[in-house]
Length: 194
Image: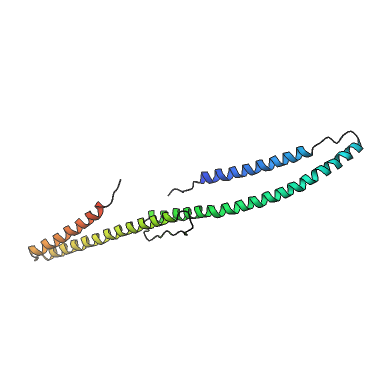
């Protein structure tokens, strides 16, 4: 069965996130480099003056940027946690749904798909469970009808083997076989195939 969330999408999303993070870090580094790269002048006194001036001007910016970075980290972490929690409400059920559909496709009609009431796909689980119950009922009906056909076949073989059976008994066994075959046909008529 094909994955509901394709691997190429996951890889592209991860790659884009990494590239975006690297681009952001590069932009901050370049900004700090250009903000602090000044000519210190042609004399020692001028260099000391520029360094002190830079210190006076940049330290408040650095501390302000540290607070800004701290706030940005806190907000980013909060957004990441919230995103993980909400994506789990969608990704978790999709993963379970995918596994359950694989089991159903392989013939396991005892699968019961359950999601939490807060999951986004909760309604879909009820529909899948209804489908599995319907399939289970149909397959059981087929099994019972085929068992009746087999019993009728065995009865007819038994009657023919004895040779001393009456025409009425044979006719009765054939009518039972026809009834069982009609039951299989009736079950089959309710199924659409392509």
